[in-house]
Image (cartoon, rainbow, N blue to C red; front, side):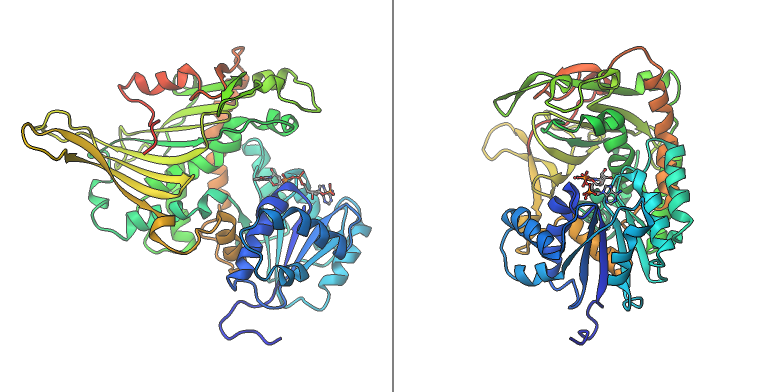
Length: 489
Ligand SMILES: NC(=O)c1ccc[n+]([C@@H]2O[C@H](COP(=O)([O-])OP(=O)(O)OC[C@H]3O[C@@H](n4cnc5c(N)ncnc54)[C@H](OP(=O)(O)O)[C@@H]3O)[C@@H](O)[C@H]2O)c1
């Protein structure tokens, strides 16, 4: 079929780890929706790799059984299934590559995307194997999933391995938080409106809170989570990326390098949290048995898992909170509080910008304005304003929200973050992906905190599942007379 004029060109998207949880739960549903929306050109193929001996028909059957039931709608589903291929490959053996090479032969002029949805230890062998099999073309790109290392040295090793095969311009390090509508709207809100920029600084803003709360625990994931913990799993990547978008200076253009240059400047301006400062400015916790949504759930150490708990399990944090400071002219003295945890009361990710109180209060009961950017659930933006309660007599004030819910304001379906990011990879736009210097700057800031925690005899502070984290997290704000934003708007 001929290409559509100005439409996307046919591409080959190769998912290494095509039978895994990420592919099944996120990538394939996102690709299906991209397809329905016309984002995939006729002839574009999705080639799944794994060691399982599935053929194309088996794989399509698996996707039909596991992915389709979770989708909204099934328009074009059969056509989508026909795009799918499965090639058994074990990246540790050279022979394994022949099947993939055969499938790609004759399509060297297409854009080729290698999506590495596999354990990071396999990134290097995959890239080397792909090059040795002659599969890396000038039009190739590679997408790396988190975690990119467990520390700066590990991230550098992965970046070196992948960088030996692919040019930095071909490497797309994904942070799916950056694909969320609210996150992109934050940039639009800040840089396409004139009213915010004059007050987006330490003169008017008291502090910023960034929360990524999950109500789920980690059943069956101890093997992974014992090595990760909330700081590495959430703060190092997602929360620091959000902090960058709140704190960055206006970029000169909305382009790949200008935006990322400004983000990396923020990361380099973070005040180091080293030595005893880590005791004062960070909090770590681990959930114990409790009640979530009315149901009893076990503590982290008692989660059902094939791996029994070890010393690493006792020491790993399922909750992390950090008080960060951005040492520059705009943000001097404005704390940025970051927190993320498992088994909290609800699943909620948001950025809260807390403004200062009015300089001179003439009405009693006025509380400061607050801007809440909600990432999940119900992506939207809410600004709390003080208003007068209707009625005669004394003036009574009440905070009222000025709310923009994306699903209410726009009739179009709010796309999942992976849809946006996959389309960006296919069109070669890396603006919402992390550059090597960003990832490494983030690790450079996180590493001393990890070292302090790992060198300490103290264990994470326990908190019952279903509560909002350990007491220390509340103290982190309370000593400055502040509190976490907890209530639903
Ligand atoms: N799941 C999520 O929601 C999520 C979110 C963010 C990031 N991530 C990251 O994404 C990556 C994948 O996560 P996942 O949860 O999907 O893992 P998973 O369920 O364990 O899947 C791993 C996939 O890699 C394949 N694989 C492993 N070793 C291989 C080898 N030597 N050769 C060929 N294929 C191999 C596996 O297939 P076979 O075993 O059959 O070979 C499977 O398809 C990880 O880095 C994870 O940290 C996951």
